[in-house]
Length: 176
Image 1 (spheres, one colour):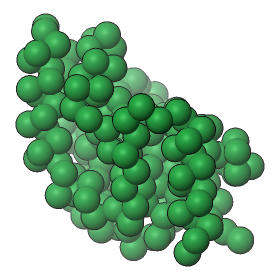
Image 2 (tube, helix red, strand yellow):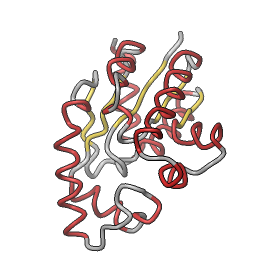
Image 3 (cartoon, helix red, strand yellow):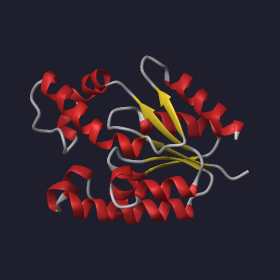
C-alpha cells in the first residue's frame, strides 16, 4: 500500500521530530521540506531568507514541495510552519493525500520551545522576551489557523510523547 503522510503545524510543534519517529515506526522514508530546500539551494533556511526576501523563499519552497508531492509516495513529509499558508500549497497538499495532520500545540508551549532556538529561526530572531514571543506566536497562529484547519486530522500535542502522537497518527491512517 502506498502511503503519503504530511505533518503541518507552527514552528516548534515537533513536525520533524515526530515525522522521523513515525517514518521509522512505519518503515517508510521521512522527507523534510526544509532539508530538501537547503540541499537543492546549497544554503541554510536563515541564509536563504537573508539572501532573498520571504516571497522568493516561498516560491523556492513551493517548487520543492510540488516535486516532493509528485515524486515521493511512501513517506512521511514534514513541511515548514508557513508552507501551508502560501500560494495554493494547502489545497495541493490536501488533494495529494488524505493523510494531512495538523500538530496543534498551545501558544505557551510553542513559545517556550522556540525561545532558546530563536536565533536559528528567521521570523523570530529579533524577539528578546518570552512574553513578546508568546504574543507573536498567538498572533501568527491566529493568522495561519484557517490554513492549518484544512487538514484532514488535528492532533493536540500538548503534554503527549512523540510515541503517543505517532500512535494517534498511525491509528488515523489505518482507519481510512
